[in-house]
Length: 112
Length: 114
Image 1 (cartoon, one colour):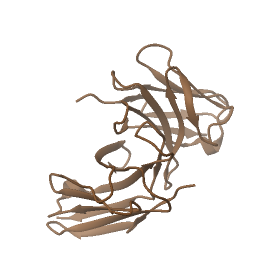
Image 2 (cartoon, one colour):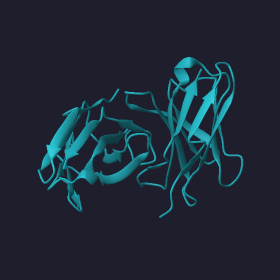
Image 3 (cartoon, chains in turn yellow, cyan):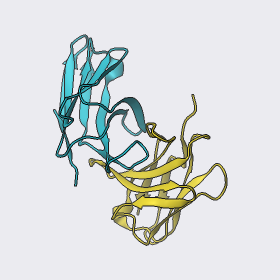
Image 4 (tube, one colour):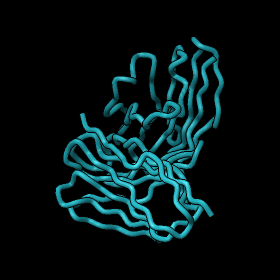
């Protein structure tokens, strides 16, 4: 069964450094999402992406965050200058129109 | 903004017992999704409900959306250790279909004792 894959599974980064989280959505899906889950808290929406542009973003998704679909298969989330509070599990998801979102296994981001 | 509250927060049951998890929304639901999460892993899609009164089943798991579309329940029959995990309900954050952002509930941690 097709699945969403995320790399790396765990990323450790110094505060202030840039980090790029990568995702390969399910191949025929058109809608892409990033969510995050801080330890012990709810899964929170960050951004949705369709037709090569952001369709919606949350208050969390400030100027330090950006997303890109650099080619036909990858979908990336970049954090320009990481903060301690960015430490979380980041999930990528994809969906087809009117269908449920399917999630990857996540990238655990640890900021030191 | 919409809030989803799940109850109970955690649940320990003996293998073979039935259980129910509830998800209550502060606003009318325009769809409700159930996901399962194992610790340190991603969310696995279980079921999607869209119409008031709708009920769906998959293996030993049944999910219902009430007629008023403000509450959903997930029922597991004859629980097994493989059912253990965190169950999350999610709803579209805006009126419309599954292409919208999902708002998630607080989660219910289920442990099944052999």
